[in-house]
Length: 217
Image (cartoon, rainbow, N blue to C red; front, side, top):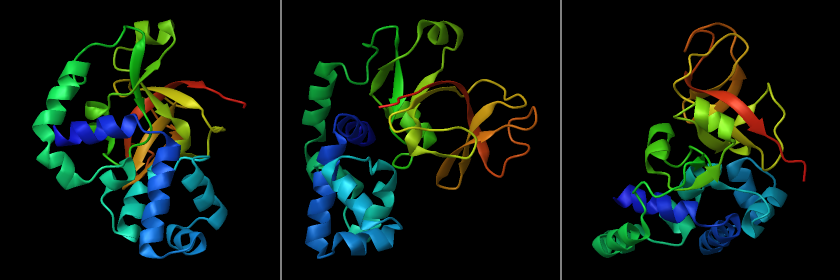
């Protein structure tokens, strides 16, 4: 239930709210944007974008947690001990809202912001954020989920800010399919070269990309 609560809070917070928490943590640590950028491997301008909510820093939260010495839940505006102390009360409130129950409409599928916080399996299991999918996708693929593609790296397809991908973990990859691969803590989209779930890749193949919803603005 604790992970469910964290996942629910995370899915309902905007990038701007997360950015405010990053700025607070950086200030508490006495670090400049440039110093934090150096440790994170990005420019100070990107730190500024994260703090102002113009770009999403969610895929870096594990690293930020270590650098700024804050629990990941801090960046979602809560402390672990506060949630644990009130877990029964919060769980009851979530049940009243239908969180954790099958209350979403038939054309809604799970929307994953990124896998860096909970990993692949927990994200699929615990996420309570939803996205409207095309009817043809839902009719053909029962286990499809949506993923914000700027949370993964790719050398095979062009990804714009805001693009969403529709993926299925049960499809057997065929040659030239684009697949989601996990290599350690990194997630990538790669073009499949052989008809196998793992051959030809350094990491584990998790899902096949069915379609990409592109944003141009």
